[in-house]
Length: 117
Image 1 (tube, one colour):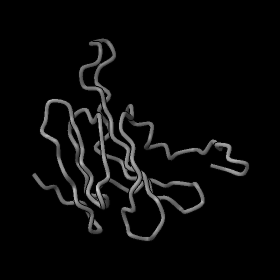
Image 2: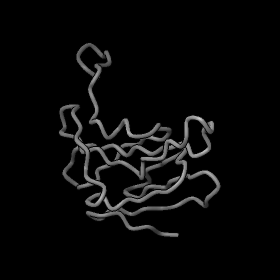
Image 3: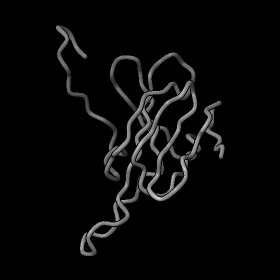
């Protein structure tokens, strides 16, 4: 929010447009005290003539503390979510991720995410 409790439009990095986003949450990925964003999505069962929209493997956007965000490269973030992400919840540094037709997955962040089952 900006001044006077009004929302301000902010541009996101181009990577945020690689696929539809259905799940967003805040986290502190790099423990720098600034809020970062997790974005998940995809559509794998789109109409045949349009094809799949599945270029999002779990995107982390690093916050600068002033409302701006930059994309963390996929290899550095350590996420590789396959499928249609539809929900995400941050539970004290662990991400609980709901992907269509898959069990819920938990990821713990300690500089790089680790997957738990």
